[in-house]
Amino acid sequence: MSTVEDRAPRSRKLLLLLPLLAFLALSAVFLVQLVSGRDSSVVPSALIDEPAPQIELPPLEGSNLPGLSPEDFSGNVTLVNVWGSWCVPCRQEHPLLMQLAEDERIRIVGLNYKDQPQNALRFLGDLGNPYDAIGVDRNGRAAIEWGVYGVPETFLVGPDGAIRYKHVGPFTPESIRNDLQPRIERILAGTS
Image (tube, rainbow, N blue to C red; front, side):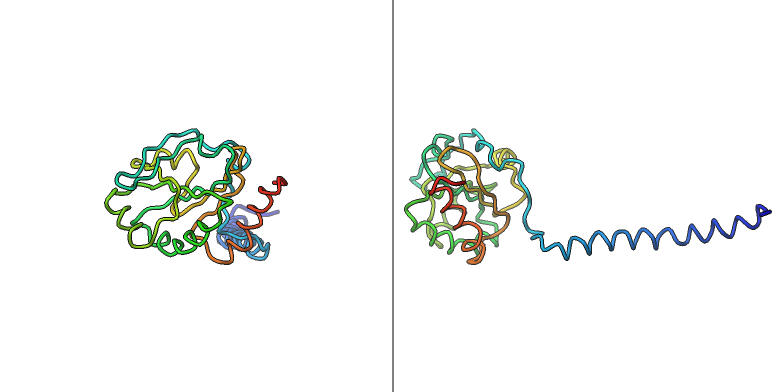
């Protein structure tokens, strides 16, 4: 028969083992995530296959381009790029957007996020303008509607106005070749 004194050391040992068990459980979760092969930079979007947000955004002052309108998506394969002049990764991906702008099958529009117009214009003047339209989101409300986590983010909208793909972070040549281009081809072929 065990006494209260016998149970106390046993419960103390269990209490000491609890942090180790928690650590092992967390380690197992991280290990499964690591070996799953899943890209941790991919953030799922609840908006995939849903209509693009119906938000009108004013044009970038001084750009001579129209703002962003939901009607712009109808009948077009459209790349919606969320960017800001203050965003270093946006500057890194910009040459790739300039290359994509040469593909006449797609339309590229910009959602200028929490930026000063003069800074955005300087950014485009320095690096070139790949956009057919630029909507200004001064307060970030439109980005919330689009489900943006941070900039840059890019959405591919099909001619039916539905979001077909989301890319978080700056594009790389590999992400364009392996992810974006095949999706564009599927949409253009009508198999998306």
